[in-house]
Image (cartoon, rainbow, N blue to C red; front, top):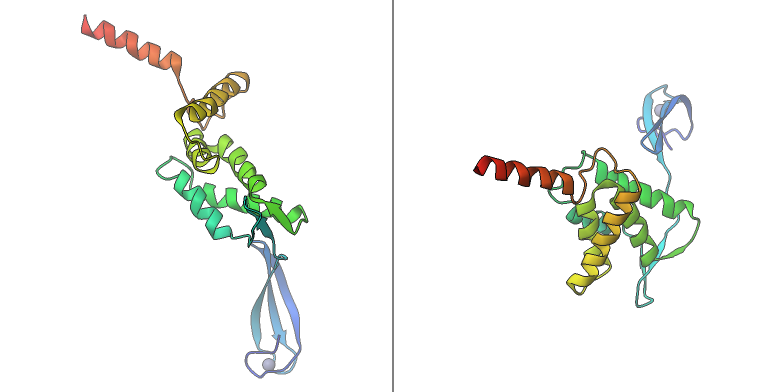
Length: 179
Ligand SMILES: [Zn+2]
């Protein structure tokens, strides 16, 4: 990069540090001694998504982000959780080293991550992505969630999907208060 002050072609690096997946370098012009900063960012090779109808479409991070944001709308998620999820998916896709990835694989990756983040967002995303055509398909997905929840411990940040015992308690106290 040429010096922005005098246009000289060479500079020395006087400081460099990692910033957000890139590198920030402080440089000094070898001709006029002016200092300036450059940022280097990794430009990944292009990645194509194989759609259901076999068409190829360039991977679009924003499109994915929009879909997931919609599923997470009004959910009590920590700031940046959705962006981080998309970052993780994107990183996994690029690290896979493949030039083309079926959209179903990406959808499954997102679902798996959403599932550990927020059940409601997961169900919303799944209902669009898996194209639940009737209530039975939706019920099956919820049943799977509930039964797997019984086997594995629930992340503390997440409320159980069907807090049966709490409901029972509420029902009891409700009855008591009516007496
Ligand atoms: Zn210069």
